[in-house]
Amino acid sequence: MSMTITGKILAHHSDLEHVSPGDLIEVRVDIALANDITAPLAIKVFNEVGNPEVFDREKIALIPDHFTPNKDINSAQQAKMMREFAIHHKIKHYYELGQGGIEHIILPEKGLVIPGDLVIGADSHTCTYGALGAFSSGVGSTDLGVIMATGTTWLKVPPTIKIEYKGEPSPLVRGKDLILFTLGILGVDGATYRALEFSGPVITGLPMAQRFTMTNMAVEAGAKNGIIEPDEITLAFVAQRSHRSPFVCTGDPGADYEKVLTIQVDELEPQIAFPHSPANVRPLSRVGDIRLDQVFIGSCTNGWLEDLRDAAAVLKGKTVAKGVRLIVLPGSQRIFREAIIEGIIQILLDAGAVIGPPSCGPCLGGHLGILAEGERALSTTNRNFIGRMGHPKSEVYLASPVIAAASAVLGSIGGPEEL
Amino acid sequence: MRFQGTVWKFGDSVDTDLIIPARFLNVSDSETLAKNCFADIRPGFMDMITPGDIIVAGKNFGAGSSREHAPLAIKGAGISVIIAESFARIFYRNAFNIGLPIVESAEAACSVEEGHVISIDISTGEIQDTHTGRRFFAKPLPDFMRQIVEAGGLVNYIKKS
Image (cartoon, helix red, strand yellow):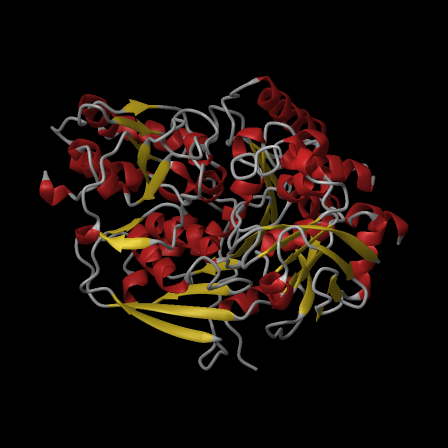
């Protein structure tokens, strides 16, 4: 029987020859992940389960990134609880401030996830690692707490929706535009309980950073996981970072897809998601005059070095418009350092950007850039729900770093050709 | 298991940021979370409701983040059960894991009005609107999921079994 890549990875982790969509299976987890918001509840559950030790101290990643550097006393207490747990259980992959960054950027960066892995994280954007040809999915804290004790969990094998991207994309189009356009077609629940597989010549031409952006936002269509079959680009990325041998697999010819969609990208413009849904997208030419108070470049969706490079290419020699605040948070300490060495940070500073520490920060309305009543932001993040970045009467628009940088200079949403 | 309570009606895609905005996620106890349940769309929700009341909502309830704080806030506020046309995947799993029963019924989601008193038996899936007398049948919960709810969540269920 033929299987998709998602089916093969799930079968491999449940010691089964074959799985079919709808099968309930128990799987081994290669990496269990939590952050400073979700870990405290998971630790409470772990303690209640009563196992004295975690299942494998080298297969758990605990990352302070959401409200860190600690934004208030309560957040500091939560971060402290996670830190003390990590120290007590000798968790190998706990990365303190100054060593790490945003979870979904540093796990790939440090080579903790390789093709064929199965990653479960107490964070909905855990689906990011599908760009590496791994199965990864988000759960809540209770599931994660039990996994920290047992190393296993149960899953229902999802049917796969495959999306093939064909044609020649315009030089302004990024993975962010591809995924926003796709969300516009699928809707916010168009892939609920499904695997969302991105494929075709456009995808094989994308660098890893843009692939991560796409799988990162699979959950915005309700998907269980996003996935891209590994190729030379994937293997080159992993070879520089991990010594483990990857379990490289691809879908069988004739594998059972629930649906196959083809998207022609030749005419595709940069895409903007309007409030208050990532699926409420419009092409740049149909945006109209949207004045901005703030532009944010960063997050697990677009905090990669390539994203900062894109922003710097647009901002070089330009100045942020009066009345606009441009906030840039590199995705990790390493990306921050490389951006300094490359001269990117100098360009951003000269343009009038404020550069902050690697953190999820403003993406979820946590800190480092909260919106006031009536304010409007363009953001490279993944969600623009009501109140997502601050006041319930603020507005968030989503776009790529290229559009974000150009819009910061223009003071309203627009592309680099308008500069 | 049977629940009866007054209905609080919500629309489609009520996401977890609406259920509990992230600014309140710096704590994880359900009592404090409950006070801020629906803070931006129905401020003071916990004080408006009577323990045992029921939420009835549209499609994709609980979309967005994996925060288990969302079902914890709803349960802590006193809601006994949620009926919706459909639920987002992670929310669905989280709700059972913390012992909050949730049931899918497109018919009930469409017909039941706010303020109606309804009853639901999660073993049979039968929902009755006492105002209109109308009855709806949701898919009954499988035994193990009903047992997770009865145990008060996954942790207690594991400890018992």
